[in-house]
Length: 609
Image (tube, rainbow, N blue to C red; front, side):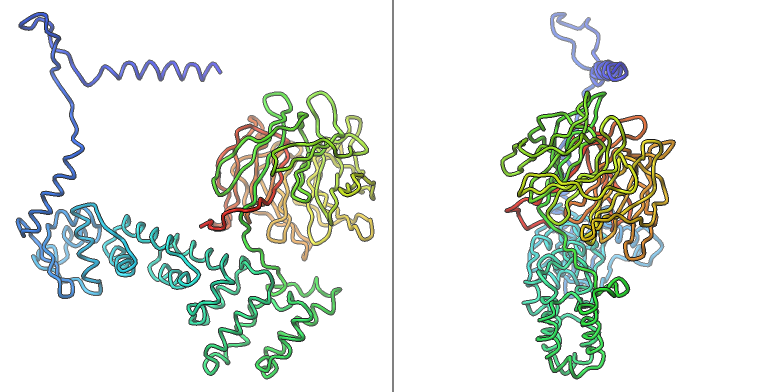
């Protein structure tokens, strides 16, 4: 605090000193004596000058005055001044200031560019004004790319983003790809994926070349209710030009995830189609899907791109951060993050302060389980309704007090795993039935674990890392609710307690935490098919007591402690930037050992682009 006060004082002092600079007073001994001293210097900057100068230069150009270059584009002859064009366009600067022949010419011909677009861009160089509209954007953008007028490229791309529609998004996508407009291409691709059921109804889709059809249908993020929609889309594409496309049917069907179709549809619709029946490769794909459905015990060996469920990016999910430890005490503050507005807002607080709290979402309600209030260990539970912004305490308590507890939802039950009760480190596990408002003990873990992370994947409950009360753990065990048994699976490469974990892209991600010596920034992920852990890029900050959650298809690491400071910063794992982490804002409160949960909010605006 002392350093902050000193900084403020220094800033105030420097600002008061600098405020006297700029007007230097003359001698008070002037004629008249009673008149105030006049300044010897008055600094002035005109806001009108740049625009009025450009305006006059444009008038001179319109009358062909002082012009030193004539640009021929198609049938259009455009008079201009080399210095103005060179100042606005890197293309013209290279042409007129280098060793090119055009630098010595008074007449230049530019080919392969629309004459109306070129005139609009030259006008912009003189006026700083341009109108982008549907009738000119497709000629204006290539011309702006040629002249390297980045500002106009950006305006054109922004215009096209606003025009996106299921009937034109594929054309805009191809146009953006041709002209290397990466941001527009990304937005158009996301739009196509999100609106796929509507996009396939338009002729643009049926006119796609094979490679673009494959590119779209291979995406994990197609927003479809079932794989039947993808199958129908591919078959409609083939039928649109059957003579030419029949040869591509098997290739296109490779990107339909037929093992995920229902048995009834697979046999009654796919298997009965004459095109499928008459093609050996198509029948092989059909047999593969039948084997997957009929032989569930063989599915672990049959995993591949066609058995991977699509994961459309979900919009309208909200991230909640609950409780934690800050400034020497447990806190009860709760806040929510909306990725669409990218801001954190305070919501109703829990009735009790809770550090080491377990948080999970069951039936769109947020549960805060156990924790420590700064003085005692808790077995009480609170439940939050995002629709009313109210917490209630009418949830049955756990059988024992738990802090640093792991909490997750499996098959409609809320599980509380491990933790500590103030006396010992726990290995017992219990599950909560919201219909009965009752907790029931299930099989205990093989190892006592506090600061444990839990995750649910493929019908199993995983308990990851933590501490046995003596040292951090790298071991992992898995609970099968069908047999009520825990089994050991592959250990992490690093010992971690108070780590964060979440399921992302069908793998379990484990980040941060603390080992025997220090807080960690490292991260790794578990592949359940291979039963192996592999490292991923480390977070930007060391984070122990970190929360990890997937929101709208993106992985967020929230708060924690870096060994020196309680953190309120948040990082997101950016798969499109070489799988790096990047900072994406800060909470209102610093939080160590807070819980995080994700709730899907109804009636959200689907126009996310």
